[in-house]
Image 1 (spheres, one colour):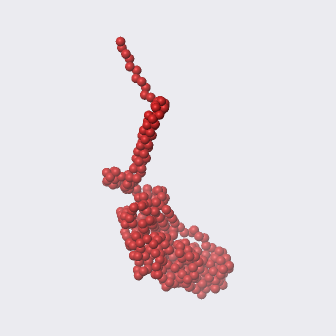
Image 2: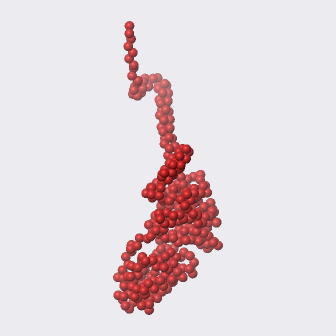
Length: 371
């Protein structure tokens, strides 16, 4: 007699649950606990797999750098490709990074300030208790990061420097320690927070370096300051300013003189630290000359002002030179020299606080005063 074998179907999940309910209470409880532990282990394993994948070391390789890719894969690291164009497009993504800067791994971006054109006082040394600075103008980006825990200031600073050096960066000045760097205010000079916004507090374990490299067809100046809690990265890219953004006309100048007896001549641009007028100043000078031609009896005192950065003597000299440069430019436009005089007053008459960059920018001005 032939017996046919018919395979029995495997029980469904529902059948297992029903079968479990048919077990004695103790056995059902044991089965349920075992099933729960199996599910939890599977979930934890999946979460850990994702964490491991996301926290693996990242190596950034230039496009086409096969050797970099092979070395990263050998070490089990993730590879991210980067070139100048890709980095530029990614600026502001992943925490608002700058194209030149890859933040130290694990850092958290706390603040990003970007100005299309601004001034910047770069700390470039210290002499007899005074902080030496270099005034720069251009596209300014300021980044502040919270440091990851368990990392020394030396390690963080060295990583930033190594990454920049690989791109052609050259260090102009460096220091370590609060007393050597002079980051806080002293009897001879203000603190760095007042100078350019780098606020390292009273920590003694501080490190700083600054330098420059070629970028985007010009020069970029990078300053990195680190204390145990935060890292500041400031980047000033030399860039031409958008001109024609402030309209100056003879009628507005006349109204200001009639109301207050003086008016600020907006739209004047000088070379950094010098009294050389830039070509972008021409529209403002033309309107000032037109005003004096419309009012033949008008006599003006041209007054130069500076902010408080630097010595009082140097500021007084620069303000006098700039006032004289404006006077000469108006004379060259047909205004009689006898109708114009020039005076520099340095930083003695501020219109805003010198504790902020915006305030210092307002204080650097040339005024026309009715005589």
